[in-house]
Image (cartoon, rainbow, N blue to C red):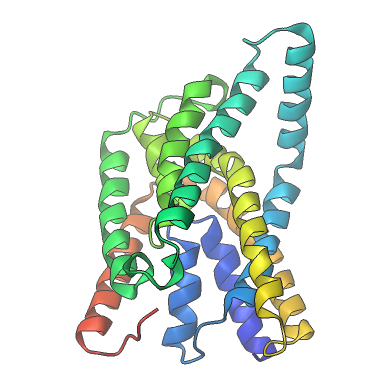
Length: 278
């Protein structure tokens, strides 16, 4: 892998991880369409850590506040405290993803090569999720702010997050869609989605990082890995900043149309025989 390829794939991972368009789908599809082939499990496992670092970097103050608030609430036995309910909601909201992951490991042991990770599935799921996000944009009341979040909101959003096990769903897209259906403001839904993503992305990164040791780095090299990781951290952070600011002023329709076009392009490429199996 060249340094240029490492930078491009790192930037793709970073920007798409937090946008509602599916990073898994893009990290798989983009390198193949550029003729580079699959970047491999070792590389993708390492650059995933860059997204984790970026989200911890941006939301560090929020994490400290929620964590200290939960500790104080437990000490004071004040279980109605907002920080306690929000933190517990985030933790409980992670359970559906864990359960879904265990289900896949047990019942679909060859998940990486299953039809659920095929290019056709990615395309169809992208189109379906585009439709759901569009419906949520139209029917969502968008009247609830961050202070109105409750424990059950975390559980509800966690159910949507669990769908992201399937490439093309997008963890950010599923949680943002769920947030809009719950009546949250767009920027509030995005911010809550990011906080929900901290344990989810961290767990996914830890699970995938074992592939780094299994696959080794002989065919990649430490320099491309390091450059790709740095590119991911920077682009991930910029993606978070940009999306929160964007959703304060704009709708999510640009992502709806993008996801629809992305799915159609892949299906067209498949029909023309230009897209290899992924």
